[in-house]
Image (cartoon, chains in turn yellow, green):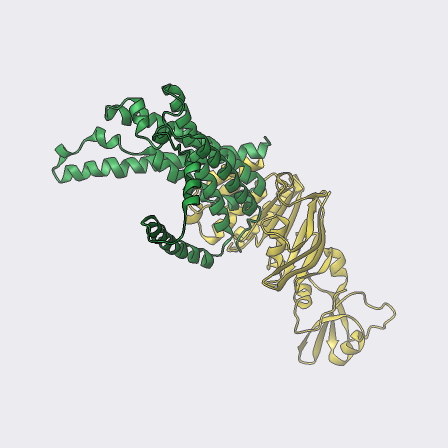
Length: 290
Length: 266
C-alpha cells in the first residue's frame, strides 16, 4: 500500500530535471518535499499525477501504474501552482465537477471552509486574486476523497492569518480522516511541525529521505571559538558554517564521533529543519550528504 | 461502461448541449433579431419578413461548424479532467461517445428544422426539399420511398458530422501538443499553402497544366458514388458513406495517438 517511484528520470531539451528518483510514499503520513527553486519538485509531482510523462522510470500505486489509469489517478489529487480550471467557470460549478468525477466530495466541509476563508463560491475562478485561487484549490484538496493529496506551494499568496487557518484545518482533517499529504513549499519553518517525513530534492536528486526526528537527530550546530570548533569538527560532514566575530558555527550532518572529546568552549545543538535545508542545499559550501 | 467514463461522457454531452443552445441563440440574434432591429430603425419594416428570415438559418451547416470547432477543443478539457483524476484514454472514449450522440442529436434538430420550418415556409414538399438538399445527388438511389430516402439522408448527414468531429478531434489533439510559436506558424502557413493549392487546382481544371489527373478524378468520382449512366439523384451513397466511416476511424485513431501524448504545459 504505497506510491512507488522507481528510477524516474526527466530531461527537457537535453537538460536534466530529475535524475534517478526513487521514493516510497506511504499511506496516512504527512510528507514535506523540499527543494530550492528549479530543483524539480513540481516536475516530480506532475509526473506522479500523470500530468506529464517521465523520460524513463515508473510510478505505481499499490503496484498499479499511474499512467492513464482512472482507478489509480482517482486516488490522488494534486493541488498545483498552475491553474487548470477554466477562468470563466463559477466556483460552485467547479465543485460540482469535482464531485462528479471524484465521487464522495465533502461538499458540506467545502462550504464551511469557504465561509471560514471568506471565499465567495459564486465568484468566477478567473476573478479571484492569487491568494483566493490558492484558497479555492486548497478547499478542493482538503475535501476531495483521495488517499494521496499533493500540495504544491499550498500557501502561495496567502496572508499569515489564512496560512494559520490552513495549517489548523489540515491538522484537523488529517486527524479525522488520516490520508497522505505531500507538501512542497519554501516556507519550511511553517510546516516543520506538521510533517513526519521529509524528502529533499537538490540538484535533481533526492539527497535526504527520512523521518523528521531522525534527520534532525543527525544534524548539529557546533558553535564556539573558531580554533576549538575547527578542531572538533575535523573529519566530520560539515554542510555549512557561519562566523560572527571570533565565534564560529559549523553545521554538521551525520553522526558525531562519540569518543571525540568536546571542548568546554564548544556548544552542540540540533539544527532546525529550515537551517538544515539551507545548509544542505547551499552549494557555495561543500555539503556531503550521506 | 465504467463509472468514470459515464461521468465524463455525461459532463461533455451536457456541456455540448449548452454550447449548442448558445450557438443557436447567437445565430438567431445575429440573423433574425439584428436584421429586425436594423429594419425597425431604418424604417424598412415592410421589407423584413420574420418567417422568411427564421426559415433560412441553415442549422445543419452551423452544426457542422459547431461540431468541428467544439471537438477540436482538446487542451481546455484535458487540463480540467486530468486535474480531476481522469485518464487520457477515458477522455478520448468520452469524446467519441459525445460526438456520436451530438451528431445524431444535431442532425435530428437540423432535420426537424428543415422539414418542419424551412420546407413548409418555402412551400416545398419533403421530397422536393430532399432534392434540393446536400443529399440531392443520392436522393433517389433507394427508390421512391420517401421514408427510406429521408432515413438514408439522416444517416448520411450523421456520418458527415462524425467525420467532421473526428477531424476536429485529430487536429485539436495535434495542436494541443504544439508550442504557441509553432501553432502560430502553422495557422499562418496553412492558408498560404491552401491558396497556392487552390491556384494550382484552378489552373489544372482550366487545362493549363501538363499533369494528368484523370486517375485522381476517377477516384474522387468513385468516392462520391458517381454513376456513369445515372443522373444526379441516383448516385450511389454507399461509397461516400463507407469513405466517411473509414475516414472517421482513421481520424479517431490519429486523435487517440496524439491524445495519449497530452501533457500539462508548464
